[in-house]
Length: 609
Image (cartoon, rainbow, N blue to C red; front, side, top):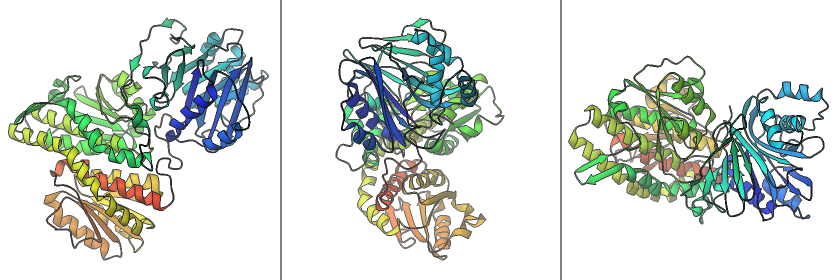
């Protein structure tokens, strides 16, 4: 969602803020702005549209100052416009605020403040915060922020400037991501680490409700009641170059190609031993939880939920454990039945997904053990879960997730296999064979990428189809959900996925010559069934693209296009079959003239409902 940044130091703030906002563009936005404090005045510049519009407005002037805040806005309250863009100020312009999140009681606060003389110039919920801080401000900025926070309901990450305090900025978070960076004689805030990597690797991850006061040479932290707390920095190990395109046309294409390395990096810390006697290790986990679990509940959103669907099949296949894979937004609002023996797994790339966090907190209140699978060290989910397993995907900048999905799968497969070994449902010989198979996946992923030229040509032939159906059976069905989402997200083509056995229970009514049917066919025992489904689609005018590991040619004459992935066990096929689908979606988006990194109306991390 929205991106915020801030700087206190010795350098000119404007170019640093603009550059940081560029690193946050992947979060999605419709306007941008900055506020810089200099010579006793706060100067605000903002504009509807892309950052280049703001840069053009700044090109003709010198905006000096070494303290500032910046923002990329994703419209929630009020249409995209110059006036609704952040930062927002109080009436006199002495306090400026940037905000990521939603203030749920803003309407009541707005009426209350208007009765006390506040004049509002925007339709946003954020402007309420500036006026509220101003109402409580009596010369002590920290006290005013604390008082204002007690009135706010909702989620927020805030950056606050005050004209009377030109040496600092105040930041606070509640249910929205915020990272604080500590450099040499300079400090930073940002919504995500990539905005800071160019300047520092030493960061703080504030707890929920904590306030940070940033000075040039230090950062002071305060708890919700104003008491000072101690906090140590953590070192970010991500490579700076990982947040750059590295010669690729788009971040998405780069991240698709990074999957072999990301898969190897995720796998490596959890495998030890010699050939034929290897084992899966999770030093950070209490593995007895898998021995005693009566059921596993997986919650996630979007791509991470699709990883959870694959994991459902994997845990049931390897560990013979019943699994419920639930959309987090549904789980949190119904009345889920919790059992003492449940093991709860929350999956989120960012570790900041609002619905997933809420579902995990609900599970903890029910005394369930919560295991997080996330990519971001220090994220809220990682801190709040009982245990955490990190994917090692590195920074993922493109909005449409690719390497985060496959590394989540790798972690979940490892957990399922280990659970199977512990529960005695996987034999010793099979356990070794499965480990060897997973170790071969990164190299096979590299091979799968070699189909990109044929997929580019395939996309050129089919990018203008009115509708695309993805189907498969068993693990292929689970993977097809993610394949359909990728095409939908970035090409804006209507696409949907269904279990192939459901074809005649509704979907077939929509099939005609404007349809492309993409079939995942990697479950060997069901080849005949899936071939019949493809024939039914083709007989009604649909074009057929088949993704299969069948090098023997079973499907060679079945579809119009066939993409062969390396041979892989049926259960692990989603790790490879999704790669051609990612490439196909990418090339379809490019053919349509879309920017795959910044799909319309989407944000990388959904930190508000």
